[in-house]
Length: 183
Image (cartoon, rainbow, N blue to C red; front, side, top):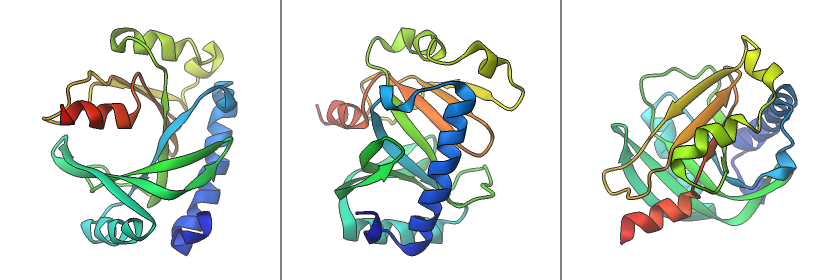
């Protein structure tokens, strides 16, 4: 499937995968122990987001388009999975630009599901990470409760980043969140 991605995104996927594996190594995190729910892109211009949306519509189906934290975010279910690290991922998140500038436009984070109570997500996610990694000045943690107006599941987030690449933990898959918005 990866061959269906535009060449710039395909090349950036190799960069992202290497950076993701390096971050996982720093965190002493065995990625094969987790299911990757989806992968996310980041860009700095709305025109880039529009171009990527048009491209993603040729290789997948738009399953959600919502306003989250004041900006549109599209989710695509891919016709064929892309391989990233130990996973085959069939969902891409495409947010429109926000306030933050990204030095690299392309793949920025992967989201993992730690099924269970949303209120205990942060403690459960932190337990997956090494104490040494958590003490590193290169590693930042961000706890949040993002959501859309329609969202009914409390989908807490723990984002772990080295400044360039991020791994996010959630208690629910993105498809569970979308299904909650429908009912």
